[in-house]
Length: 153
Ligand SMILES: [Zn+2]
Image 1: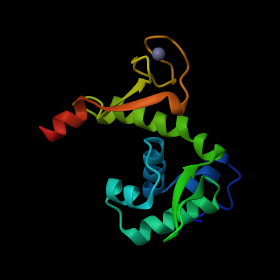
Image 2: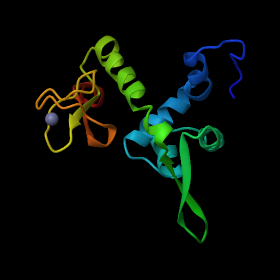
Image 3: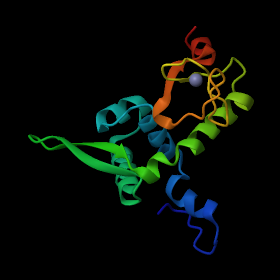
């Protein structure tokens, strides 16, 4: 589906990268986990060209990561909701974030992941540091972290 194809590779990593191995694609999915659903909101959040965004969203719908749901009739407007396979990408995105926090964030994490209603920080194994529960995507609340504040200061 992207320019690079790994047709000759019988490998689940290569197959997954066919769908989410492109920078914008994974950032669109990240935004969806942060609660973004509508085209204009993705566009504003990512600063991506509209044609590129439309193309990536189409591909993600085609690949079964998002489904389009109408939220307005006139004019027709759709929002993008993660499907079950899409929601299953959460540990992947979360692991990337934790890896970046550990190795690429000298001022601290730009974003904190907290257990909703509990307030504990969530570690790289998706376990809450306060109550010890394993936390699902929908139970995570993102807050600005020290790395983001350092950038804005
Ligand atoms: Zn907790």
